[in-house]
Length: 356
Ligand SMILES: *Cc1c(COP(=O)(O)O)cnc(C)c1O
Image 1: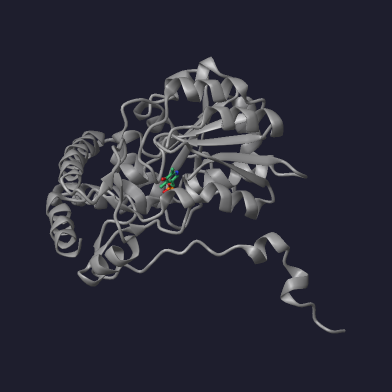
Image 2: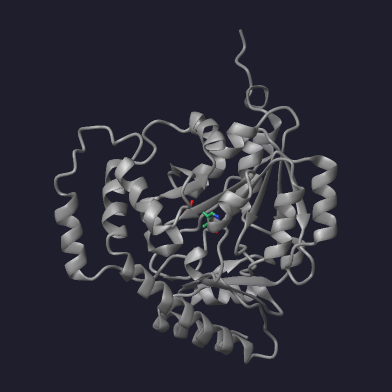
């Protein structure tokens, strides 16, 4: 028998996808991925090493990650009566949600432009994806959004709050209207909550169809890969069925628990980053041929006359940011820079000065 070809074996949705590309940053100043630029001091590193040196690497991790969950409940102020579940990054939680709600013509809806993974994961998991464009100021286009929700009754709506890559936080009353209009689930993705003024976590008990997602990545622990989903047990007990038993490894459980015991350090760092964001924002605002948007995240979106050339120019000078040109019609000539240390931000501004 002749072997089947790749196109016989793999469904059309997968063949049509392009894999998510992460560039190799080498020795460059890395301002492309919303990482916290600060490492731990010597003392903390030593304490952490002592903490993990007796890790039972021969054993499977606690599948329920009980101790870590308890610490997260306190730190993230999960309201009583709600459950939490953990993912290997919130990316994995998006995947579990998509797997749980996938099925013939089941729909995942999100505003656009937003986090690229919603669409990619929906397609991989076999859900239909619908994107609804934001308005020209990157706010929710409420007329189009509510109309599409009513017409298509999506199983899951994802709202990044604040939004990536635009950096703004949508209007609270607009989001409330989305939750009230949706007959399915609404997931508020609060990846940037350490840098934002408001949260929906405290609203979980107001809305039975609301889930709130968080991650420790942008806080300063991207390497650990840990995200969490909070909400009513009736939803989480279903989503848990798609979770692989040991998705949070021993070292992540121990290290995240250790880090949460030193949460004040992260609060000081994110506070610093918020201040430096203001400095970077006003420096960018001084250029008359740069359009720049306010941010409630640890990055800034800006538009220049020739984004690709500027991006390449910065790269040639050892500075890696994110070029969004071509990723969505509303992001023509847009770039996204992560707020780094004051020195990194200055290096970025100096390089920019020579190129623009
Ligand atoms: C970075 C990001 C995530 C993914 O976070 P991980 O926990 O690192 O997987 C999720 N949502 C948004 C909006 C993000 O920007």
